[in-house]
Image 1 (spheres, one colour):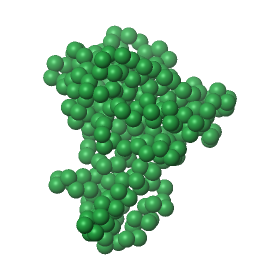
Image 2: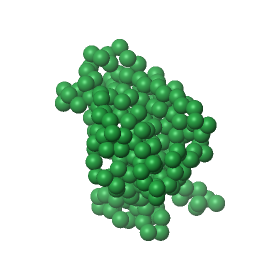
Image 3: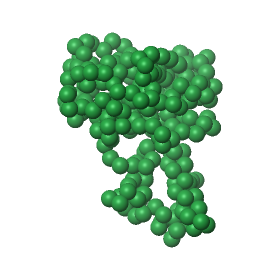
Image 4: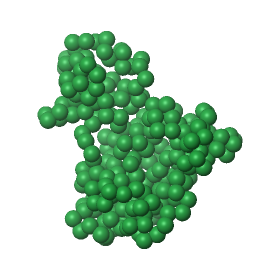
Length: 258
């Protein structure tokens, strides 16, 4: 069974300086693009993160400060990366919770807009966890019968993720093949921003999921306590969360004016 694509899909993986979406940076990115007609395109870049790579992180992916010292910074690659993914759905392993949010931060930091309005995301890890409860290396062994060489290399992990999804489609006859249905299957919870600070209630209205206004409707909080918006904008929240909050505020303002 093959993927039913109505638009390209980009499988991608990041190696980073750490796991803090707001503060950490990309040191390697690999993108494998599959087109509806079967054509494929692959690109991998090492990235100078403009910050030290902690030794404990280097121990995981093997990328040292010296290895990326003379590589381009993300801002130099941002337009090329954005152009490669802008017409595509996205897929990865744990991508909903980590890779997509961190990539969004890097693109926004580079001055390029990014959102998920006209695309869907498929998290292959979620399929795996719902079906087998394993890790990427175990998934590759289980589904493809192969050992994952060079694990924690972005390129190796990206290609393994693509092969795993194809094997999952073959193994599970009840698994949908179109991207939107796969995205719904792999979505863990309803959230408006990637980091999960703004969620949706049972009426699909935005609510805060943290702090003193946890569970309260965003529009009502912003109206009753205008300073809360400014506090979030000036605090250490992800750029994408701030962008989403701004859009909600502008929507409310436009509704008042119309």
